[in-house]
Length: 396
Ligand SMILES: [Mg+2]
Image (tube, rainbow, N blue to C red; front, side, top):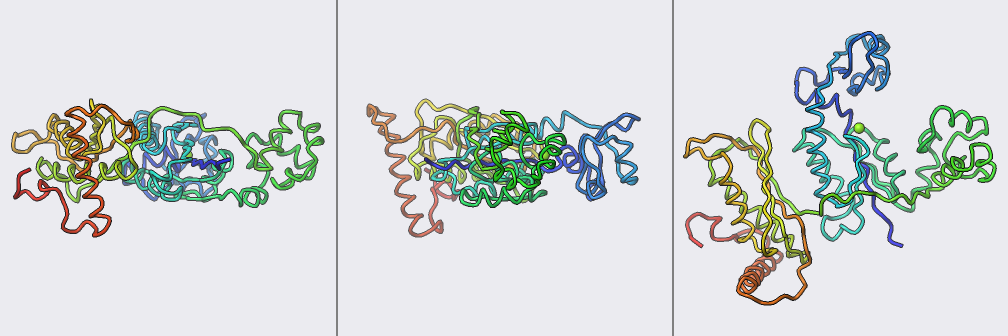
């Protein structure tokens, strides 16, 4: 059986972090998001506030007693929703199997994507980096063969955590943890387990199963016993969008000269096409992403009649998508850009033989040219090799 590789990705102190991101004067300070009224509760607390023992769902009055200097901020759901959408869009780029647990956490099954995306640690680091760059927030990631263990792993090194539990280490990892880490164990169950002398997950794993079922009820007992032994066959249920391959870049300074942006996009199309060819894929859909200086972001996608891994074909579409956007200093349109990106989605394998029409022959030629360039780059690196249009002097 193939071991599954499941990520649990969770944004750190989500609401409070969005507030700190958007208001620099809140950074480094204890921030409580929630209603300040007499019966208000804490919806989220920044890490600076948690030091004082403040937790979410705590009455606001209690939180302020523990941390009198805390700054209370009313929730701004619109901005949280926006950040959540961006967060999930990033996850969708890494797997078709993304299962959201709430606005700020999800399981991502990356089993079998190694060929395309690299190992689990690479994927986790790439996700963390993109969440910082694109959403301005910090995510913690846990990686394990099961959902249950991945979820614990993401929590255990928060904030900014990354914890990988290898299949062989699952039981060692689990058994040292307190029983309250078991999924579904609240205060009541915790007390019942304590009465049986069970304090760690290891205690539960080693306890006779039939007695556990008798004491906790058949279902709960069976469920907790299985989890404690590392058994959790629940799969990640998702399936919203296919895997995509993408490149993007934040500029050193905001730009509105199309030529500059187009050159970056061309280089990105080259990289995307190169990765497609390396893995024998073609893209059916090509996506342009532009983030403006004011952090507004647009994505434009176009489906190709003929799937391709030829960077010229990809770039042609990307360029026309770009030119339809309100950027171009020379035409008096303004909209400075801080980031651009290209991704290929809706991938298909490149092997299926087809009828070789004109378009097909043209595509084969483009791909063959790309293959040659790939081989040269593999042998000699990137130096000195680029398509003619990178250097503005020549014409294609
Ligand atoms: Mg969270």
